[in-house]
Image 1 (cartoon, rainbow, N blue to C red):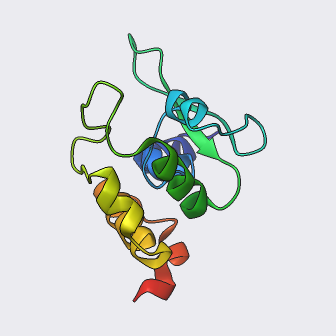
Image 2: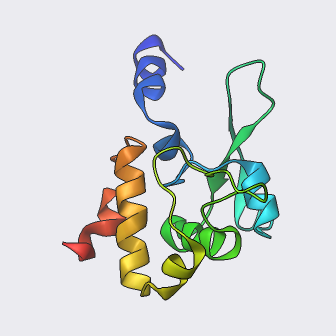
Length: 125
């Protein structure tokens, strides 16, 4: 990869590079029951010393993200927020329509700085 392309690649957000609107990790993908090489691949590593990797979503990034949150919610098993910028109680998330869930994912994606997947949310305007 030449220097210009390398610089462009570095400017893309983790959410965009991995087709993952919420930029969740492979650990989250595994916990949600996603299947490696069917639903996701191992994506970008986090900076050292972390051993985490972002999940690269293979198909339907918005639908897969909804499936993950439907399964795991916005909090970890210890009750901590899974994302620092959003935390919706399970009962409220599960009461949302699919369209409203897509709207929440769109907001999360914007918070993650993503732009390349915006066409997936165009029907929400």
